[in-house]
Structures are given as structure tokens and as C-alpha cells.
Length: 389
Image (cartoon, rainbow, N blue to C red):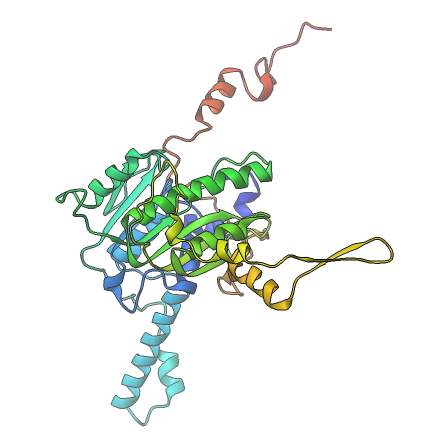
């Protein structure tokens, strides 16, 4: 995203810099939290240990730091807290002066002047993991590692429990992952690579997630994505697919939100084989498929072959073989549209990025382009008269 492109007309891009977020993806996590209560506001003790996978540049870790460590609120939740404070103040003023009208009291209050009440949590531990380096954040333990490598498991456990052994570690409440590969434009290839990255993130999450914990990860919606949903359903009681309003509708990305983790007895996942679920832990999918009676084929007079299953058998196939997760749209309907570009306000001043990239993958390409004098060498001999005819 650059200042000279249409990104400056992206409302979430501008809001991210105005609200001091490192990237616009921070709004995605905030909107997911509004829908699913990822941070357990009613029971804060149930969300104090979090692992952020593929964290760079750190916008999701920044949300975790400001919500869990500093106790701030954002989005719809912050607005509701302000309204509750306003109602309480009006009620208190009405009790002290019953003769005054409520309209007079409300008009005398300044909602914007009210300072939000911070509610920091205790014993918070947040570990951010990414292959790329990331600028430091308050209270965040950073680990530069590859989530697809088996050695990352031990390093993650050591970062979470520096004073305990690998066999006596404390589990975490929430694992989030906003990781995605560098897309090639070939959707089938991008979806395949993203699914492998998703399985690696799930394998790491299962190693540290407590029973009843939550897992949130980016997913690319493809043709056979319901098979992935069915595998998540083996490990979590509730699985939803969410599309935050800050995520562009033109993008195939979505987020799988898994709640209430239920461990499989006697199974420890391995990064070398991320989906090696034992046969004893599987549901009755295979048994149902083996016991399905022979399909009925009817040849019509025009030569078309019709394939039919009894209603009961078709229902069992739909429920047991391929499970479709509920799809939810997150975010206020009155919020900005991520696919729209808005007219810049009068006197607009373009802000600098909150945190420039520390080691962008395109750094070598930029340096090479500068050394060659610009794009395709067109500006290399700028100002000179060409001798070629």
C-alpha cells in the first residue's frame, strides 16, 4: 500500500494510520472479536495466554497488547461501553436532581470528553511467531521461526513457559493466525499452499491449546474447502467461517473460527504429518460410506442416466461425509465498505506508516531497480540524448 495509489482512498487504510495501527488487518481481528467474543470480556481469566502465528508486521499482536495488557476497547464494544457510562451518569444525575429533565441532563454531558475505563488483565502472556523480523511491541514475546518446521514447537513451548520443562507447560487460551503465502494468481495453487500453512498452524495450536480454547486462522475458500471444515469439526465443537467487513469481498480470504477445543485422547500431532489423525479418533464417516447400499441408476428414454439415493442415505452422506460450516459476516453494516474508495476529505494530509516494514521480501527487488536506474532501465539515462537511431 502506498501514498500515491488508490490505497489512500481505502477507508480502513487511512483509519489504521489515524488510530496508530500497523496495518489495516487490525480491524479484521476487532470485528471477529465483536462477533465471537474471542477475548472473553465477561470472563477475562479465560483469555490471558495467547499465541499469534504469522504475526508480522504485528497488527494482530498490537490488538492483543492493547486489549489484554493495556485493557483498551475498540469498535462496537468501545461504543457500547461509552453508552453504558452515559446512561449511568444520567441516572445518577437524575437521582441527585429529580426535578431536572433527562433531556437537559443528556444535553449537558459530553460523551467524547469521557475517558474510557481501562481494564488490564493479570498474568497475560502473548507470544508472536513469524519467519520475518518484527518491530518490538509492549509485552509481546517475539519469536522468529518457521511455523512449518518441527523445531518451532519446542521453541514456542520454551517461550511460553521459560521456567518449566517441555512436559510441564501451561496451556494457552487462544491461538490466532493471519498468515498467508505470497499469492501467485493461480487460485488452485494458492489455495493448496494456504491449506498446508493452515494445517501447520493448527498442529502448533493443538500442542499448546487448552481444552475449551479457541483457534482463529485465515483460510482461502476453494472448491473442496468443506473437507477442511469437516477435519476441524473433529477437534472443535463449534466451527464457523467468518468474513469481516474490513476484508475485501473481491478476496477469497475468510477466517475459520473454532471454539471449544476437544482433545483427542492418545493423539499428539506432528508437523511432519499434520493431519495424521488416528483411525480410532475418526467419526463414523468411513463406516457410513462402507455401509451405503448400491446406488440406484435409472436410464431415461432419452439416454440420460439419473443417479438417486434414498432420502435417509442422502442425509447421512451430507451430514457425515462433507460438512459445511456456517458462514457469518462480521462488522457493523454501517461501517466502511472495504471494496469501495471514498473521496478524500478537504485538507487531507497523508500520514506516514505507523511501522515501516523491517525486512520486506521485495527489498532486493527495489534495490536492484534503483541500481538499474528505474523500472526496466527507462530512467537510467534520464536527461541524456540517445545516440541510437
